[in-house]
Length: 389
Image 1 (cartoon, rainbow, N blue to C red):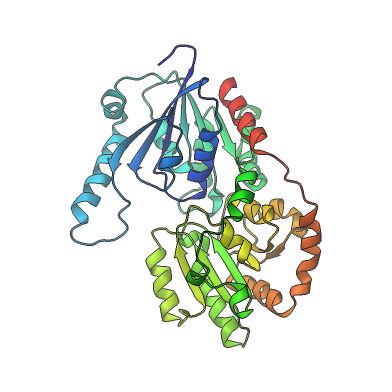
Image 2 (cartoon, helix red, strand yellow; image 1 turned 60 degrees about the vertical axis):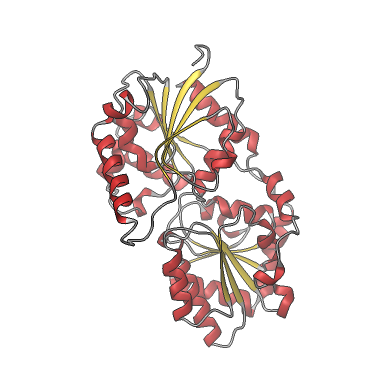
């Protein structure tokens, strides 16, 4: 590694199709390649964003192959091996640094998601600065007690992506020095790319429901298919509204370990003709554009970047009241904020179906709305944090 470049190790699980992974890759793509030397260490060499990582970033991994989400007998040995190997390296990090990392020295060790708190804190490199990037409201994540959250203060800097997460940390801080470690940043988001990709007409209209096909309103939701995202709640509300005589369609775009469970629920509810699970696509934006409403059904979030994508495309928005939503939708000026419950989602969708004129005021605001950040400013802010560590 060249001496004049900052040497950085970044840790993340994989580059699957999640918000944190997308944001990390967007950040890397917009870094000047002559300023840093970066090793990106993945637990699993897998994910749709692998091909987007700049060639100058050195991608390393502990295991290779697709994520194993089932318990099929043929997959169990590989699944056990991965878990045991990763736990071994977590418990005895010196093995990782002597073998896989070959005694490399880093100026900064960077956990790109909260789940790598211990891996980076327990690094045998005591001279490196430790940087954390938190994308979720940890008060809603199982196992994260106030005591555990306070462990993040062992980092030199903690980047948080919403006011609510920042408030959580500031309330837990015991000293001014701890408060100074918490910095609020905007996630890097390439709005120009979103607008260009939304014009791509190569997708097939017969694969998904469209509002033009039968004039039924189309609700779209995009995200990794985890329980956190509440797609099960969305489907149950969809069924409830259909039973009450409100015709409409639902499109879920995304993949994840809960995909088969949600798909099974869709079948059990008899929604095959009205709800579509498209799976992952590297360009969801034409689907965004074709929909009448964007719906965020999440149980919890940190700062749902997908809402900024919906705002960029001037969509009618319905969102549960999770971390970041009030901030992003400017207290309800840019979209409808509902109670974070199945009933809340129901009331929001019912309002859209019975009184679509209600959304005109949001559209008026969206037409003149300017993002509170741009891609360059977000990347520059993170670079400034890195450079000052």
